[in-house]
Image (cartoon, rainbow, N blue to C red; front, side):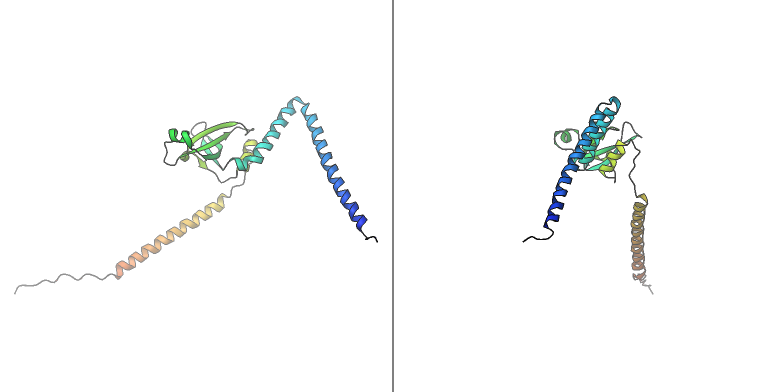
Length: 198
């Protein structure tokens, strides 16, 4: 007794398995062949190797390697550089170098266009301005030398801050009004009685 459709289903499964195997093998072969061609070009070889290293290390591991993005004044006052915040400074460096009440941060200052190299700096917390952008967006900005700039909803933040300020002012106004009401409602002291000597 044969079940109808079993042969067709079995053939489809075999074709899917073979297709996946061939596609994977074929794709790897093409990539390997292309890398061999690029590896024979003197100028393109260096650029391709650097870009490959960047996208494999920075973009794939930036989220777990760094916590936040910030800017510091570097290399001098008035010039700003993007930095990646690693962690709060601790241990001997924090014990011997900390002169701030807010502590210190361990930050990584990347170079452009290869952010895999850079400088490890230990700076006071107040000297680092924390940004809202994601680590991935900052890495893309560094790699592109500032050509790729992430979107920033500055208008939305201003609306929220304006609403908070308006609510604070309204609360102060109500407090003053209540204070005036209490002052008006307070009884007026009577003048002291004067006893005239007759």
